[in-house]
Image 1: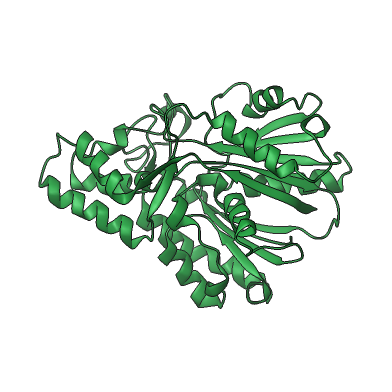
Image 2: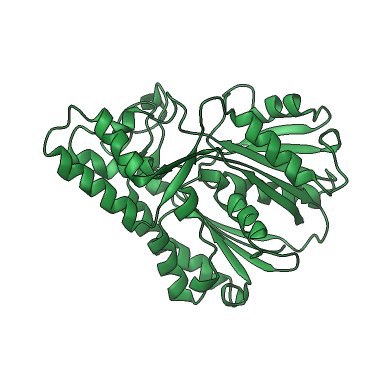
Length: 346
């Protein structure tokens, strides 16, 4: 399988760390303690993570318009139009529907009327899972082409705890809330073709025992899980994540995947990672000799969830840092927890 092309579209509004701090100030009037001290902690932690700004929707911007733009860009020059797409996979957390799959709604809107459709929801790992599955379907001779798309617009009011997560009640909550303040928005499209069947490979690891570290629980979650105090600490519908513990798990589990890749990490031309803490990823890169090859987008985009790697690839292409024939490695660590190392020639 080859990635024929990849495209991304970002909303217009730029939100820097100071803007986020002011939102926390606005919603945290009931804070129990020294509000100004808490706000300084938020600002310091965001700055130390390497984050500068992220994009959010401006008034009137719609996720489907950004997704449509990404699809148009990814198909340009391919000889394919929307009506030619055989398989459409919608991935990630952002989306307007729990039923039917978001893929069906996108296909109908964009004129992909003959496409087979399904969704994959596996937190930030969703894009990587989709590519692995599409590769298997190509090898089985099922499809001639596939599009993997997402619209990670999670700052819509009422989704994932916005604006509730900006209303801090006490400093202890900051352990769960800080990752909320790193979220950015983006839509991406990835065009896949079944050429070069042995080109793509991915290795996964899962740690279900760490599932409580990052979640968005829905109504009635108590009946689906043996609940303890670490589960849904902020309540229903709110993005809850223990950032430090997530990075510690990354440091513990990711090296096994990197070692299994042999010489590839050192030989890769460019490395793409989840758009999260720069120090965490740089530390892994330094340990295994590829830190200088990582194309970081986190400072400019924040955490764009399952759009992280395709958005980075699209930005790298525009910047002249990714060209056809480059050997690529992708590293993802995701809620679940799950970890993946992907290798392919672009």
